[in-house]
Length: 247
Image (cartoon, rainbow, N blue to C red; front, side):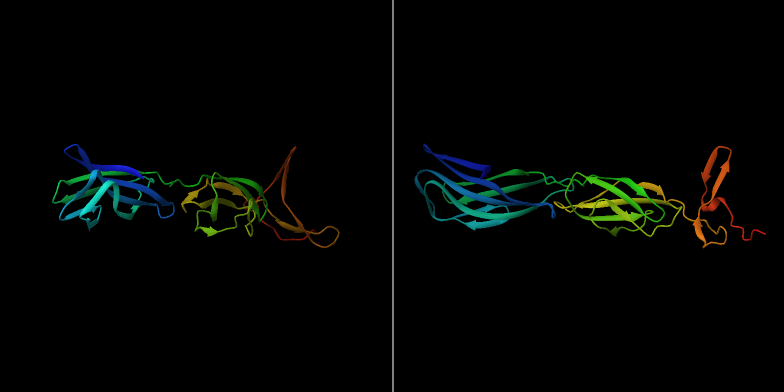
């Protein structure tokens, strides 16, 4: 265990001490907390030390002491403490202790325990367009973390749960329509969401007319403007359908 505080006493040629130590037991990345074990012990440099009464404290615990302690170090109290970390994942705590006896050992000690940082970084996610059709679009995504959930939103709407498969497929879109799409993923280790970039895209223009040649079955057709050497496919908002016949 790691010593972080002590109060020492000298009597004749002997040294005595009340010593505080700590040990990291675990860290919970989702709850953003650390659990540590605190330990208080008495060190005796002589053959033994005796007093008629004694008490001590460690953090929020107070406890009584035995009347006699022999040469060496004796653990007198242990306790586990859960410590919250801040939003950046940093955690620290000041722990105090005291000892009060009728003979020799009376004093206070304490120290700050700095805990290992807990990862609170959001996952990095990037999305790119793969294919865009009339009513369907697919996107590839990449991330620097393991994700356990994925959501997407169309046109900055509400987030919807989507499959973790890659590529992502959107269906039932309107043809010849402008859209934006964004995804976000939840990092498996700490359950923090990270947002991707936003993709803007336009679905392919669909069928604008039905034509029949030589009275054959009507078929889908698209509308183009031919100007000199230029051929341009037009969208729905660039033309008006005129009903009529060929007479």
